[in-house]
Image (cartoon, rainbow over all chains, first blue to last red; front, side, top):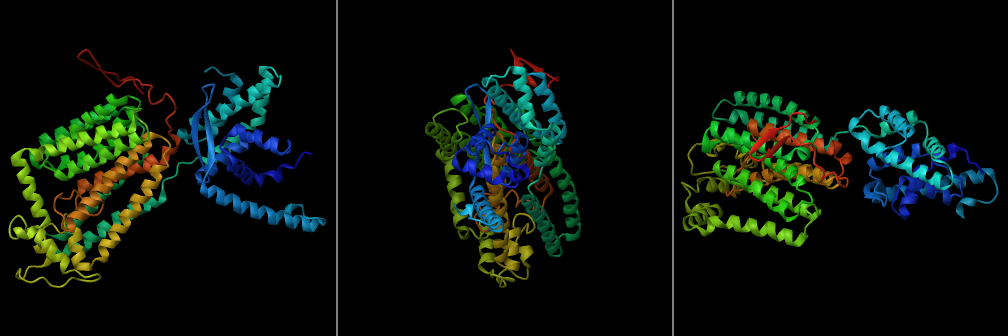
Amino acid sequence: MAIDKSLLTGSTTMLILKLLDETNMYGYQMIEELRKKSNNAFELKAGTLYPLLHTLEQRNMLTSYEETADNARVRKYYSITKNGRKHLKEKKEEWKAYTAAVNDVLGGASFATA
Amino acid sequence: MQQPNKIAEYLEVVRQQIRWKRAQSPVLEEIENHIIDQKEAFMSDGLNEEAATARAIAEMGDPVVVGEQLDRAHRPRPDWPLLVMTATMLLLGLAIQIWIGPNHLNNGAEMFQKQIIRAGIAIPVMFAAYFVDFTIIGKYPKVVFFTLCAITLASYLFTGGSRATSTIYLLLLFPTAFAGFVYRMGNKGYGGLILCEVVFIIPAYFSIYAHNVSVFFLLCTTCLIILTAAVVNGWFDVRKLFAMLIIYVSTAVVLSIPFLVMSGGRYILNRLQLVLNPSLDPTRAGYIGTMIQRFLSHSQFIGEGLPISGYGGYSASQLLPAADTDFLLTYMIYRLGWIVLIGIIAIFTAFIIRAVLLCKKQKGVLGLLVSLAIISTFAVQCMVYIAFDLGFLLFPPVSLPLISYGGRALVTNMCLIGFLLSVFRTGNLVTDKAGVSVAKPSRFIQYDNGQIIINLKTK
């Protein structure tokens, strides 16, 4: 199912932090990972990703380092900081509260608690 | 590397949106890598190169929008906390000069005016240093280092030989230049390490000729810190423990030479004894030490100290020479209480800790070494000054940065702080890419078979 883009924008930060919470990655990897994990539902534009990564780095939620890949290209890896983990936790709580509220209004079982 | 024109065109449009020039290439490189990764993925899915490139670019999004977003993410920002602390120290220094003015034997108002003018010179110098691209130090370390040597030598020869006070302040710039030199010696192994030590001898000798043991101590400490940081970061590509041993053993051996020479050893021992116990000779060589002890023992926590008896009707500022420069802190502790010391230590510590935190975040070794050099130059001055004013007289103070009276010290320290802020402004964009540190830029000066070739065509 294609998902309305505006639903994605608000939560991109959270999703990126979540990905990096598991392992360090470079930009291209993040987009691929996100696509795989969401069964192709999330198609994050690379053009949106990089400005976001750079902003998060300046806000001390991520740090980056460079590593030379097999094909001699230099890759910029990102890793989450303590600050970033804290932010992720807050965002998650926020998200849970939000989805629970939406589900309450829509009626039916609360999927968010699953 | 040749790249398809379409990618280059796309990147060019993105580049045009990013106003901060320094940020452009690292950012574009990342985007370019991404497009190539994406293109290769599409090609392995069966698309031909042209179609794969077109799709990879389309996936990236509108170059103008992407560029604008990147532009917003990359704006040069000064580190406001450090800038505010610098301004505070500068203003505090001026306020103290106003306060101390009327107590002077000389005309305090005129001295204050002079200090204001010097601050007026120091502030633009700081901003000029702030806008200088600090990587120059890493690109042309020899030019920077030896030009500084030449200027220092000239100032030593032309401004009064052994009492060369200008030389002292020029020497404060050496650790920063040394950091650039160490940077250039990256991956050069033990030879590079030894060369760094050899180069260090030049400023060390200057400081000895200028008869300034404090500057000598400052140079030794800061350069040791720089070399240690470089070795710990694996910069020389040598066995770390062994390299440390070389650095510290050679330093220890060189420093112990004066002790081994009989007369030198006795002189130093005498001096040390007097430093630790000035009452051995309270009216002559131990006068200052005795005076400081008296002042401090009569000081209170808050408020003016108890009157000191036994010295006739002389006021505190008359008993203590140079109350505005070398003994500013002792004088203020006596007049206003120990609280002053706590305040001064607090602001300097805050400045140093903030700077060290930012220094640790530097991505490139050059940024790390240069900022470390400046921070240690600043920190050693503070420590020497505070120790001296508390009665430890081994190292006569250079200055209490930005606070004690004196124009050259003020301008030099403001210049260093400006440069430090410059490192923190752009340092995150300067990384040591594989090969960059080893690749030689076009040489500015070349030595060839006894000839010196100056290449003016370098960028």
